[in-house]
Structure formats: structure tokens, C-alpha cells
Image (cartoon, rainbow, N blue to C red; front, side, top):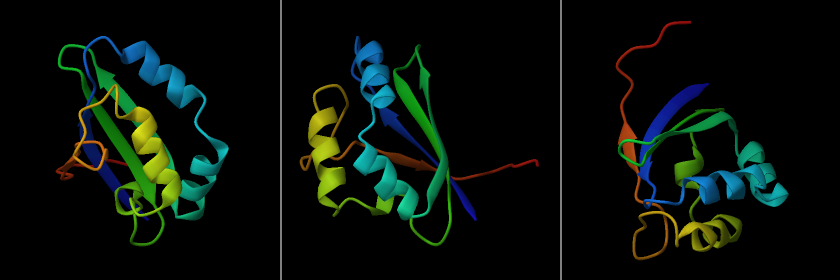
Length: 104
């Protein structure tokens, strides 16, 4: 098991839409992530900065950040591109955050 965290950037005024879209996450995306070993995945929103903080656990070597070639992921990126800061390929701008402390 591996823990990973990263941050993303929400465009101002889209917090409700972001929550709405994730509340209705596509079953095929959820299955693909689960089948790929991603679990215990949470995303938090810092309203002062519009930064989204994501943390996930993974089985194996891959995380959600390694699944960008999957057509389902690319479709999700396109769906979310209007409300997030994205790269030219519509992938969300993400910044990995190294773990500096953990307590069980």
C-alpha cells in the first residue's frame, strides 16, 4: 500500500459544480480507478485559495495520476476542464505533495 497526495486548482465560483460532478462520478471511472488499485480517495477544497487537496491510497505502483492514457480518464478531463486549471491536453494541473509525516 502506498499513500499519495497532490493539489489541483479550482476556478473561482465552481465549488458547487465540482461537488455536483463528483457526487455523480461515472461508474466506469470509479471502477477503472478501483480496478487500477486506487482506494480511500478523498478530495478537499480550501475555500480561501481554491486549491483542491487530494489524497489516495494505492495497491501496487500506479496512482490515479498514472492513468491518463485511459480513454475514460481523458473523457473525464474534458468534462472537468471548464471548471479547473488544466494543461493543454485538459489534464488537471496537479502538484505532487511529498509526505513528511504520518501517524497510524
